[in-house]
Structure formats: C-alpha cells, structure tokens
Length: 181
Image 1 (cartoon, helix red, strand yellow):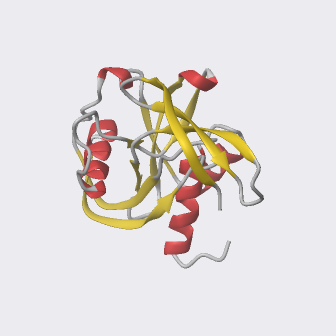
Image 2: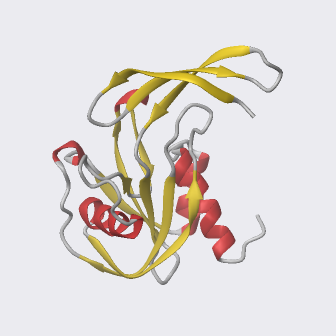
C-alpha cells in the first residue's frame, strides 16, 4: 500500500482544493502524488413510467462544449454532512423542476479516482411531477429534454453524452433493472 509521508495544500478555491502528497510505495521508492479534493455530489436519473429519461444540457467550460447529462451537483460550502438524498432532491428540483415521490439509491461511483477524491451518489427518481426549475445563476443557460430509450442511445453514440458519471449511473440503472449488459 502507498503511504503518505507528508502532505501540503497547493491550491484552494470555493469548489476544490489541490494537494501534493509525498509518498512511499510498497517497494520503498518515493514519489509525489497530486490529489484534487472536492466534496461528494449527487446525480439523479429522473425516469418516467414509460422508461423515458430526463436530461439537462449546459456549457462545460473545461471541455468548451455543451453536453447532455443527468442532473447532478454538490452542496455549496457550509452544507457538509447533509444527507445525499437531500442533495439529490434539491438538484432534481433546481435543474429540472421535477419532484419525485420515490427515490431509490443505486450506488456510488468515483469518476476520476486516479487523481480526485470526489464520489458521486446515484439515485433513481420516479413518480415525477413537474414544477418550475430553480436554477442557480451558473445554470442560466441550462436546457432540458426528455429522451426515450432509443433517443438516449443515439445521444451516447453521437457523442452528445460523454459525462463519465452519467454513463456510469446508467450502468447502475441497468443493473437495478436486472440488465445483463
């Protein structure tokens, strides 16, 4: 197992921090490991009775493009320790305006555990009712759509869905439905 010898924060902003850890590997060799620390977040798969899925699209600055994904997000500073289900319900309401009578926890994924500590709690939202979205200023350009299963597959094939958490969450949904791949 890799052991941490020392650790120092090298960057921090309101959303993340970056640290460098001096490490010792099992063979005794030393090295440096860079880690991005971000709070865990929730991702919600809103699914209608007919199997259609609700997606949101927004501009993602780091990759300079607009892509479709499931509603997702983390709490602002000061909400640490709040239950993931609470966060999932808030993200669903904020980004889509949807409310769910039934929420099912599907599992946890780590989207980039080679360099980041952040985890993603995945929930299935069902028995949906529509209300107005409550988007934050950073989500002002967000769009929303309802995609039937064939439309979902087309969005993935065409490269319009590339978000790793969204794709991993769909795998958890498939397993929940009893899928075999």
